[in-house]
Image (cartoon, rainbow, N blue to C red; front, side, top):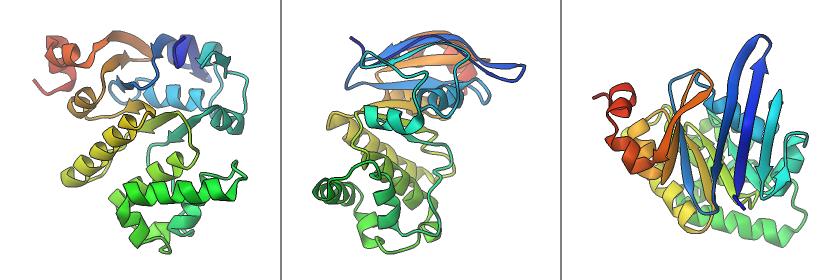
Length: 236
């Protein structure tokens, strides 16, 4: 049984068909990338998986459980954490308060404490700024905080929407090093990344979306070598 299976998913915004019959799956422990131009439907897919958008039709199975009629907080309880585009930290709250918000469905205080220690081990810079307001952090630090907040859910699937957006190259390198590190501890990752070269070098498998449809798929290294992908997404 696949960790996540999307079957013939359709999502619309009024008369606009944002996702048109998308089907794909991913296995436990994988990093899978969705690549494509702006407006291809990538973020809509993630938002639909996490319950923020409603599917017009189709199925979303997570570890065999149907998610399409489930409330967002129940989807988090299933083990899915979503880091949205733009990070969306709570700017007036401290770093620690933001992280604790990620664990608001967890009642075990010892478990929350262990989660904070894990995040601060992964992101020592957040430990240094644990009492600082999130809105005063740099863009890279806010991305670390958004990742850390998602990790506090203790989910088995982490969905990342444009983690490199607006960040300096050296910071992007740090963020993706951590993404790989998180994956190595057993967390599966569904990745949207505008930098297709970076996405394909991080993921094991990828799907290419155009205007709401999957047009190509395969092992990431095969897609890196594909002339169509090079021409459309890699600047060749």
